Length: 313
Image (cartoon, rainbow, N blue to C red):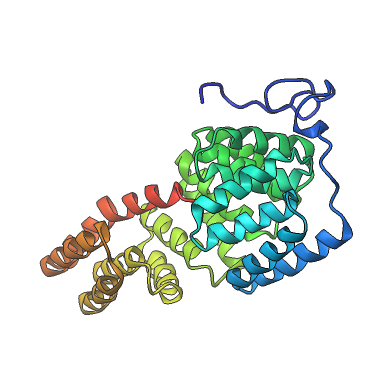
């Protein structure tokens, strides 16, 4: 992509065309969301909220068999299948949903986010159109903002995310994504504040709390970081990198013995590069508290922050 995305809700579509020129997704003739489909989706979303993505996918596949090509069913089925690790199938679901030329802003935003995970160039058009069509819908604004920040348009992304936060100040996802934007901008204190708000609204979300802990290390607030990382690791025992962060944080704060315990927890789940990271953490623990602190602050925390900022959890 070469052109910087622009946003003018009054006059522009995703390719710079006028919003009233009769062209583009916002002028499509896709069927409206009917009561039956809405009921099916409500049940599917409840399954997802309960963590039953297998049941959600099975339910939506059955619905799709009776209503082939329904973009709403395709889109939410893609969400379920992506969560289950069925990336290739999910990608096709999102593409099929957009091929139906929907004009529902949230549907466009969800499908666009799905395509963005696969670096599909159509993602930008869908997300920008969604934001134009649904400027008062927080779900469209934060999804477009999250895409912009990760594509390098950080200022524009933060603008969208701030707008989304004004529309829904209680959504932890919006607070998290705004924190990502601030961190990518290098505004660590602002990132800490917004990650903190996300944690207040979703205290059991290990990913978000872990990001708060890493950002606190970046800000040289070691004691606060140790608390957040400990809590995050308790909720995500299979996250090897998080366990290593706790190990070095404990050691850096004078408890090397506890550091060894968390290294062993990390080893149990570590694969590939993470296994090498376990070995490196062991070396630092053997060298003592100061070596663990230096490695944590200068190498591991900055690397973990960069890598996790690029991920859409």
